[in-house]
Length: 495
Image (cartoon, one colour):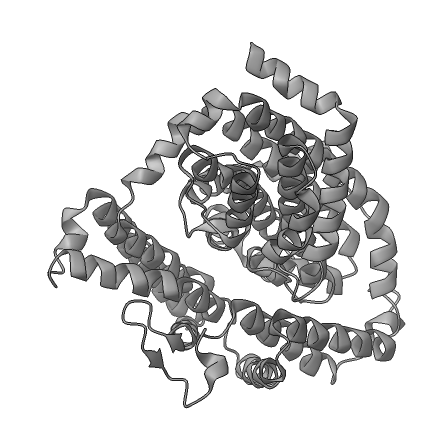
């Protein structure tokens, strides 16, 4: 009962409410700017939390996390530039809806779906943190490697009609993921004497090159969308009705489940959850042919999932001190700065901080909804301005965002090269999603695969002896087989 009172006190505290709105606003702004990731947006506010009380400081930083997870979808939908990995899956249908003049609908689905997902994740966070977090301890390196393989098996189903090209694109993504320092031995690989490549190719550079710059190149030869009244007809945010939300209940439930699972597992995060939710939403959809062509399900599923993760990722962080991502690592650092030790004792010694955080996150999710309603219509109007001004401004934004990541001119050349690669792949009919999946999941698969071999003395049977690993590998095999059968049947019908 006392813990519930802490939660209610936080929800009516002026300082907590102000921190939730301020953090959410900054998160949406930072999340929507290419090059300013969620963790960077949180880290920039970290020095301002030193003089705040622990509860207010935690709410401020966690609200940035919530806002940034949604903010990444704004450029993904409007300019085909996912500002974060968790928004990459939103590009495929969100941007198509924008091109169809349905920008307001896409952003409304993203906003409301994200708000509902955040509240669902918060409910799990507040009621089952200590119990549910124990599941994360069951995952061993073989299980993590198998999880990555399960994620990469999605390539088969998202490459409908072009499975060979999808596999090639996925391999290219995995090849990009091997550039840099070896995760086990520390030896530089494929760097060709370039010290800038020691840390590998940042996923944000890959996404901005593949999606944003390749789209700029494609747009150069297409008519001006601003001159087409049909494409400009929607300049207002359109929130989905209850009837629409009910019709889209299946992809939302899928996103809730996958967001919960991925949030509990360090290394999973919003990127994996959004991609897997997109894939499973397509698999269970009654209209899978609409995916990639402006499907509402293809927008609400990944956006719901990554906002569920924004809450559930705090479970292992608070319960065991295990940050699952760079963003939760910043939050973990803030806890330590304020003299709070994460773990089971945190709930016993400082319940006012923990449950104050839960109350602040509740306010933050509604702050995200309110700020979205206020800010998005002007943003849609801005994006619908004439192409020469818009494309020039977007190019400057992309390149300045790339430079701001590491203050490196080398990154500028690298993202231009990736953009040319993305343009070539698109011109030849290769899907880009498998390549992004390979780049995102490659490090996770490689590092845990090699750790597993070290644990098993080089014996591959360790992946079968681990029950969770065996289950995940079985699911991956089942996914590949069913996708192959479906592809074969499709080819026969086409013939």
